[in-house]
Image 1 (cartoon, helix red, strand yellow):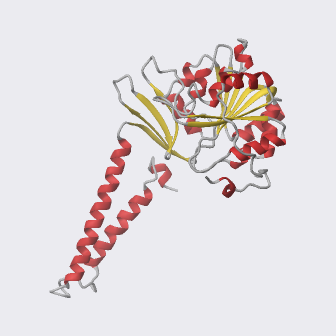
Image 2 (spheres, helix red, strand yellow; image 1 turned 180 degrees about the horizontal axis):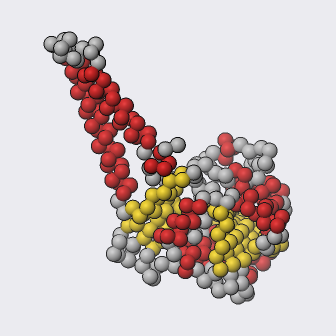
Image 3 (cartoon, helix red, strand yellow; image 1 turned 90 degrees about the vertical axis):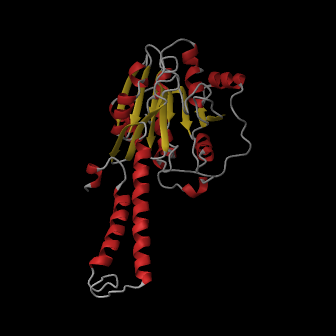
Length: 343
């Protein structure tokens, strides 16, 4: 109850380990029955003194490592913020150079970064660069190619990188469950503030927010809806069920595009998504990008029934060929099994 209000990171475990070690060493000398107490045993055994020395050395080493870990996290640190959903850490590197950048991490998972040099400032980086699936979904959408305004939604804000694709009269709506993410994105990154599009951030669970909007405001009629919540160690399964996808398509136009970011070290989401696409009679494209100097390797699945868009992607030859039929993995609100998708 106290730690979240006192620490900006998960330090209580480390401190307790050090404190217990310190208490163990001290107790050896304060306990009147201890063999290390000179008044009771003028000549304490060598083993007892050796144990005390090793314990003290171990305590000193643990304290040093804790200090070094804290110093390492503090290098280039802009701010660490701990909340209900975990610890967010913003930091910057290469200050004063053309490669000066800022990054946002949630635990060990990167949520995005941005270069500060004016030439690179508004370039999409990380998983969202020019060769990524979301880039193609937005830049090659027939609506964009016709020069018409686009209505884009995204579940998962990160640092707001996707907003860099916004053009005048576009509308971008981000759904973000963690209010601290919005705070960090606005304070240390400029994608949202400098986007040409009209930006709106809805705080709350993405699926719940979309369901509420559907009942109170009707369909958002998105041209593109981006799902960007699956690259962490614990994925929100409720966003990958049949019922959730029915909701997404109630908010998409009939020729809309659903773009799913599925880059993940441990889980393979392709079969889950392909089976869901079959359920709702949509086609799916698999787009992988190896990344570059300012982008990261990324994997996307694009779902749509927009034949014009599919033809454009086919001409660009950016989609991978599926090498096998999807495994029979069917997720609903009543059933899901993460063991089926472990890599």
